[in-house]
Structures are given as structure tokens and as C-alpha cells.
Image (cartoon, rainbow over the protein chains, first blue to last red):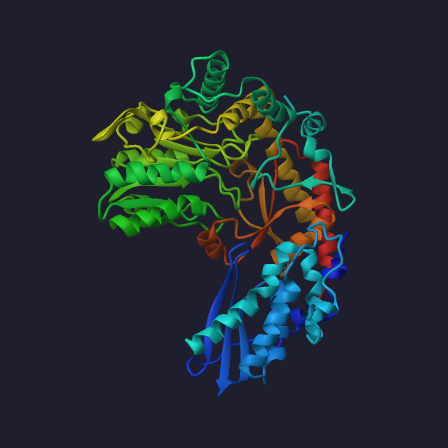
Length: 156
Length: 410
């Protein structure tokens, strides 16, 4: 049985208590997108500032649970200073880590291991335990999907 | 008469299971109730002994199947005080029942500028169909505001009723448990020539329901919250209204005749039941009615009032101002629904910790976002009580809440 400590790792609680890069950016020049989790009513707003293809700032607004808030907070530290392509690689790796694949819903199987290509995520690895709690996966990916949406706005 | 809750618990097989190595504490009956053995057996027996399509075959088991499903309609009619079982239309759920009224009655009778008056307590099921109608027909959705203690503010009711053709209101809030004065609203609607639709999804399972006493014109509810199966709901409507309404869905069962150039709709209620109906579920809801009637709705309500009172006292004593419970404090005016916010712990996080204790509550916006915005929250954790809950369940909830408060202590 997965326990609470599998979900609420210390680094997650730290980002929840002290969220990084909260706030707003002026639009334009910043891009912005709004995401909703219809299950729980969580709302997140992601602002992205680009200089050329480099992400120079990201801010997070809205409210949500510890998983969605900490995941969005960690995301900001992972993508600020990176190029759009690098950020999208991280996004892909993260979403791969968050996919359930054939792992049992009862959480008895092991979570994805390093061989699935999800290494190099740093602090974000702490969110690996979320896959044992399938209903929370949407919480963890909310900020990322919204970030992707904001980037999409730039390319459209 | 008091309920023998230990005996009732034993009627519900699922309540005997464990989750995460601890006995289940099921406090989410507002979302769906558990099912007693009597309902499960009735549905199994139907499939094992008389399964055949209804209103079609002339053979023996087809007759038995038709009779059994129509008996269920009679039981449901009796259960809600309807004198004419032909006023009971079976639908998929309460949502479909309300959509049926919006599509059939609404699109026939309402024109641009007509007003549908809702309360801010409504579930999305009693909001979105009226928004859809407004988009299509130019009708208006208007809202009855709330008082500070979460009841309906009817001080400007006369003004609110101007131009209103339908008052559509919940009988018990699925978020706060608040019980609005439905009779007063129905009478006020009729006084201005409007009709009254009642969403009784949280009422029929918990309080004795009598459509004549409520004074409404339409009543919608669902089977799975009243010990019955999913996949079946009910629309009750006054017969002359139903008879004047065109069919909602077209197909088999709902016709008297089909020609190359058109069709003649069937009589009510079958006019509104296109296709093979959920026969087994009709048997199931009939068995659920029998089960609830056997215990007595007044005894069930009395039990829930006393348990809600115990819950409010226990949680208030243990958590004080740390635990906010929305809704009226007077248990005479509320159902057994407790929407809670524990400090600033997010509902999703709170329910996750509760789950580790086997305590099942609903976390989220409860499909009532206009109300949530009014309450100033995006989500709450909701414990909802039913006939099989007792004080030990409340104590388990309180212990789990204390654990959550400790876990997220910062």
C-alpha cells in the first residue's frame, strides 16, 4: 500500500509552503494561459516571458492543492533560463514520468525506473510517487499543460 | 422508532470491506449511496429468472418482466406521493430528467425574454440546461441570492419573479445541506403564472417526499443516491403538463405509430422513454423504495438529524475555529451534508489523508461552482451521511481530520 510519505515528499511540501515564482507578468510582452482541473476546481494561470527562444521568466497564479502548486513551482525553477526546446524536453520527460502505463491502480507495482528516460529531472523526481495515486496525476500535470498552452500561443 | 444502524450496516455488503487495512468509513452518500443486499438480489433475480424485453413479447417471462418493471413505477409513484403512476417517467438520472424538461417543456413554452429563476444553491445539472436554453432561445437565467448563513434570501422575491416562467430549485443543497422553503417558492411561482421544478436528488433519499405537499410541477431525482442502482433517474410531472409536452428522444417504445410521412407519439410516460428502458435498474429502484419504506423515511430523517447534530458538536468541540463547516447550523433546516475546510489545507490534500484512514469523503467543487464562488472557496471536503452511518463513523472522521491537521502543520 502506498503511504502518504510516497506522495508528500519533503521537497514537495517545501515548494508548497514556499512557492517559487508566484505572481503575474504583464501581458504582452509575456504569454499567459489559464488551466482548470474540473475534478477539484483548481485554477492555475501561467505567465511566460520569452527573449528570442529563451525563457527568461515564468510566474504562477491561481490556487490549488499541494501537488499542483508544488509541481508548478518546481516547473518554474526547471524551465527559467532554458530554451523553448529544452523546456519542452523537460515537459516530455515529466509527463512520461507521470504516465501510468501498465502499472496497477492499487499501486503494488514499482513506479517507473530510471530506464524510462525520466532521469535528469532533479527535484521533480520527488513527484514520481504521484503515479501511485492516479487521481492526483492531473494535479501534478496541471501547471505543465498550462505552461505548454502558453508556449503554444507564441508559436501559433 | 429508532433505526437499528448495526443491523442496517449489515444489509450493505460493501460496508463490510476494508481499505488500506482499515474498515471502510463511507461518508460520500451525497455522491452515491451504497446498495443493500435486497437491491442487489432483486436485480440478480431479475436477470436469472425473468429477463426479457418489456412491452413487446407475448410470452410468459416477457409478461412477468413488463409487470415487474411497471410495478416498480407504481412503487416510485407511491414513494413520492404521486397518485398517478403515469406521471413517473424513468430517465438515466436526475440530470437527464431536468434536461428533458428544458428540451421538451422549455423549447415548447419559453421564448426570448422569458426568465428561469434558479437559486445559488443549484447543482450544475439544474444550471447548464437553462444556460443552454438561454443561448438557443434568448431566455434569461436569474438567481435567488443567499443570506450570510447560506439560506435563500427571499426578501426581494416579488421583484425576482418578474417575467419568470419557471422557478427551478433544489430541495436540499448538495454542498451545504441547506433546505430551502420549496413550498413557498412553488406557491410564489404559481401566483405569477410560472411553474416550479424541484431538484430532489438529495431530498428523496433522506426525507419523506410528497409532491402534493411540495406543491411543485416537476420533480427530478436519481436512483443511485437512494440505495438503488446507477443508470436510472426519475422525472415526475403533473399529467396535463407531460401530456402537452413533445417527446425528448425518438425511437422505439415512445411511439403509437410510425408511417413513411411521420409518427404518432405514445401516451405518457412511455412517450419519454425511447428505446429499451433500463429494466433491471427499474427493478432495482423499486427494491430500493421497498427497502427505505420498510425502515420508514421519518425514522431515517430522525436518525440523520441526530447524527448531523452529533457531527456538528463533535467537530466543533475538537477543532473549533480551525474547521469551517459551511451551511445552516440549525439541523432542522439542513440535511446530513457537511462541507468542511480545515485551516487552509486544500480539500484534495485533506481527503487524501482521510483516505489513508479508510474515510471516504468527496473533495472538490461538488458540481456547484456558482455556489462555491459565493462561499469564496474553490473546493471543500464534503462528508455526507446516510442511514447506515453512526457515531463511530463521525469519530473516525474526527480522528482522521486531527491526523491531517498534524501532517500539514505549518
